[in-house]
Image (tube, rainbow, N blue to C red; front, side, top):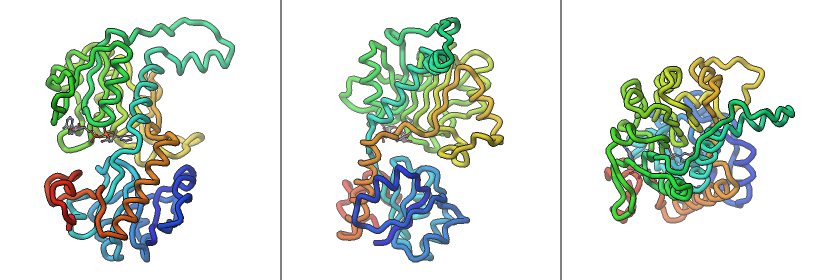
Length: 340
Ligand code: NAI
């Protein structure tokens, strides 16, 4: 099995090069309509969150005889799974370290509300003044968690440890979980902190929008470590300017694909919305870093390699995404046979 590996970073190489097979060729460039030609002559491609795997790219991959797309991430909103069906198999890594993401979420929240990012800069400059660093206790505050899957639930446990009241919204609430589910409207109205842990779908795109911003509790802290598209960034910015939104912690951004994971220091960033957000004293941005722990990187590499070798050996992969059976993520369990 020969795999073209796109959007390679040094930490990817370190975790994937440990394996004798399959054979990876590492390309630093992302997969897109312009770069898809690099996949010629391979059996499969390995991609990450910001590679473009739309219908046009899939058609070219199919033409080249590519048999599978191995996503080395959980989210798959960048892959046209419907278009791939019947042509190219799509695998993903459903979970690699939900703890990594949940813990980063709390790290962002604490940094923001206790002004750690400001204190760090001040003390490095021997400025020991506390003016402007007043935070607030998390204990007793209401956190609204949108999406109570693997990451959302770990974040809920962390919040409970802090003595917070947890309310949650999920389109598919977990039974007997002891989670206090409320409607999305109620969550928006009651929460002091809102944290997003649901996938990006047609239903969840721009959950934060000009209308929903009006319903938010004044001073709310918005935390997004899921997918940028859950938030209309201009509406978020307006909410911050109007002082309705008290702070925002963003590990993801809707237009991140041309910016995140790259070094633009010394350049002029063209995205005015992102530049304005970053200029706000109450906004913290990390560049899609929540997954980045040693444990997660090892798990990503192991599961991706297992997915590929299972498909190569048995023609099936438990982590295949399937558009056909309507249960994209769990089709194997339902059908007990190949997806196509
Ligand atoms: P999961 O699949 O275990 O949980 C997702 C939850 O969202 C499920 O409970 C599901 O029922 C719920 N959901 C689905 N549609 C919904 C809707 N319309 N409204 C509300 N809830 C809905 O996924 P997991 O592992 O917890 O990951 C959550 C998200 O985190 C992923 O979709 C991914 O986008 C993001 N992520 C971000 C990372 C980062 O580095 N920033 C790394 C890994 C994941």
